[in-house]
Image 1 (cartoon, helix red, strand yellow):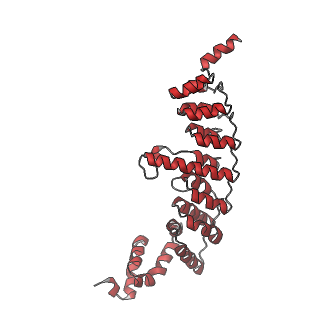
Image 2 (tube, rainbow, N blue to C red):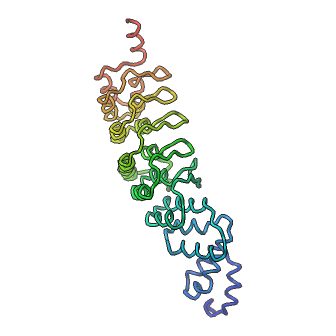
Image 3 (cartoon, rainbow, N blue to C red):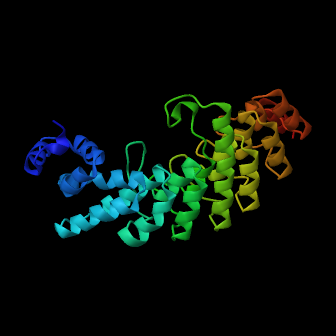
Length: 313
């Protein structure tokens, strides 16, 4: 006998013994089940204290489903806490559901400035931080249009610019697999696009994170990201800034091995004789022959060489 031939009363009894996931699968099999059990499924989801049914709907990016759930919650006088609404916005960003972002902010009442924790985040952050880290230009643009603060600081003291220039390690790839060349090219293109977008909305280039006193320029230099370095300098980043170990952008760029980034910093007036707290100059840290060539041509010295020169004075 097919389930559709059973009396509605019996189907309801069976449904009460199903897990929400299985109940949802049953509802999807036939319109008669959807009509009979749809509200039951919503009630089951709304009975969950975490209200994960709303996060599931946000991940789907379906305004109609979200509206049905919220309407049912209102009917049952279930209050949706602000933090759940904010988590819905973060979930939509995580799943690249750009089309639903405006609905979540303007209709549902999610806050784009709320700091939200989720499974894969080290620290609570705003939706704009997440969009910038993902290299999601469309989500970043939409959040800015909705009034997100381009200079918002997360609980770790990081701005969206920090996330825009930061490149995840290969093992941090979202699918758990090593990045390939296409992944890196796509991320690089997207990160520059995000950087241009944020700076175009008057993001402050000089933001110092409190842990290691590093600015977005220092982060860009760590990766030897020449274009990001250029953009940040053009928008007022301090080329002489150093972190808690005395390392400057030129130290980091030299260590990255990218001679183009080093050449750019030298041309922009970076101090080739800067000494970090370990008494290293950028030349001491040069990771490639091409970087050493650029620095030597500019007249750079190693720490010991600089020490001998100073003794002669």
